[in-house]
Image (tube, rainbow, N blue to C red; front, side):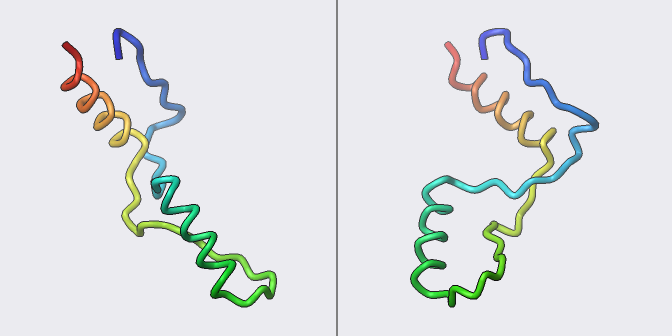
Length: 68
């Protein structure tokens, strides 16, 4: 990351379910084709949430491994 930092707000212990954008697009297409249009909300996720602190640490580790 060439000396840059990742700013975390709060404790960093907030959990998020991270998805790849193509998977979200496919989920929306499937929902539009298969689910009745009755105005109900639905969730799309992996059911494997990760804390923002863990995500930041993993990102830094992976990027540092790629730096010369």
